[in-house]
Amino acid sequence: MKKNALILLILFLTAGSAFAGPVAIDGHAVVTDLPEALLLILFGCAVGLIGTLIGAGGGFIHVPMLMIFFGFSPQLAIGTSITAVFMNALSGTFSYVTHKRIDYEIGLKFATAAVPGVLIGAVIAQHFTFTSFSILFSITLILLSIHLFAEKDISIVRTKALELPQERLLVDAEGEMHAYAPDMAIGLAGSFFTGIFSGLFGIGGGIIHVPLMYSVLGMPVHIATATSHFILAITSLFAVIIFTGMHEIDLDFAIFIGVGAILGAYFGARLSLQTRPRIIKRAIAVCLLLLALKLISGVM
Image 1 (cartoon, helix red, strand yellow):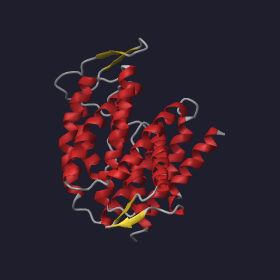
Image 2 (tube, rainbow, N blue to C red; image 1 turned 90 degrees about the vertical axis):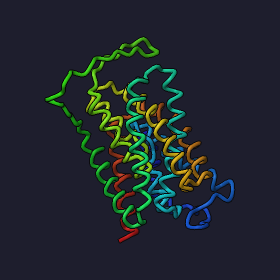
Image 3 (cartoon, one colour; image 1 turned 60 degrees about the vertical axis):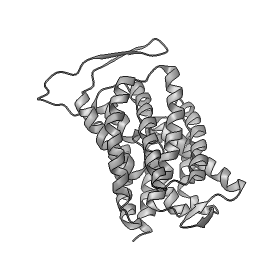
Image 4 (spheres, helix red, strand yellow; image 1 turned 180 degrees about the vertical axis):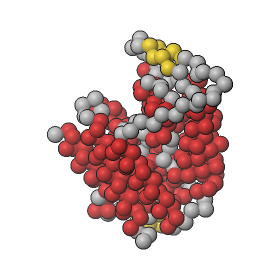
């Protein structure tokens, strides 16, 4: 029953056009009454739930939905999405602090590498037209959908490293010890490009950072997820500052969606303990594919 409810919830996201959307003013929608605000909170809750279930932020759904159903420009969708992602990441980070699963040293180093990338991505994003962004983002969604279906890990090993990665030990709140030895050079380089991707598409970095740290760097999945939230809280904060300076954040939308995302992340964490990950990932992959086709069909 819960699995069917989850699939129906995902399909609900792709059917957003069935609802009467907010009024469009100056090229984008604005919230005008309580039902519209509740709709945005429900939308944010659904996206937050989905993002938590696959260990990533919800920006990869925020952006196309804001463009398709609410009339946002690419730049406004990116800025609004990254603001909602920041709220969700900050909330998740506070939760992971109590679990003691954040590797703060790695998180700060990776965030420092990612921030310049966020700035570069945000500047590049200013040159997008609706058509070019829709095509590029659709390709990204399709590739992400294929990745979720394939469920294949990526392994990168530097054969000419000057020194072997140092082993790190972390004891969480439950007393469990985690040992791992990430290659920092690969992690720093990957974080920089993740930052570019985040600023370019407004999707946060969790969708890349989690598999980077878990599959490539060999960090335990719980440490990777918690540290990714910590990194995302820092990088998305800088992104919010950047897009605020560019006047490309719809604050009311960001707040309502962000509040919903925080609620959805809470329920997603509980649901993840009772639902098979493969079913979740493949249902979401179908959702992303449908969003990609909807987005690209609007400019063809």
